[in-house]
Image (tube, rainbow, N blue to C red; front, side, top):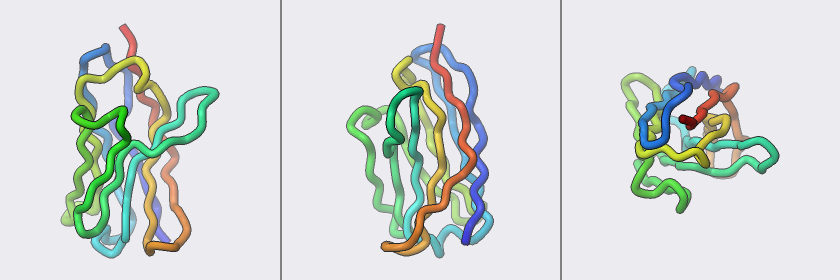
Length: 117
């Protein structure tokens, strides 16, 4: 099992930047994959970015070139650097962990990101 705690959300103007953090309760090098999902009002939760224990990354087309996912194994933390933010990026962002390839998903409590002028 793993507990996940997100931080770093907030209100930002279009074109601005935010960095989200996800602190895990166990050593993240033991986790198969971690990622960030988001859910906007009235929409389904969608994958934003993911990173495996081997540092392979995957991004949604809508954020490629703007967002970067990274991990710090020493701090057991995964980050999402978000640049050039748009109003469409407004959503609750959730950290996700899957300890094994076919294992269950663990979720954080979510952090709100609002992009508005």
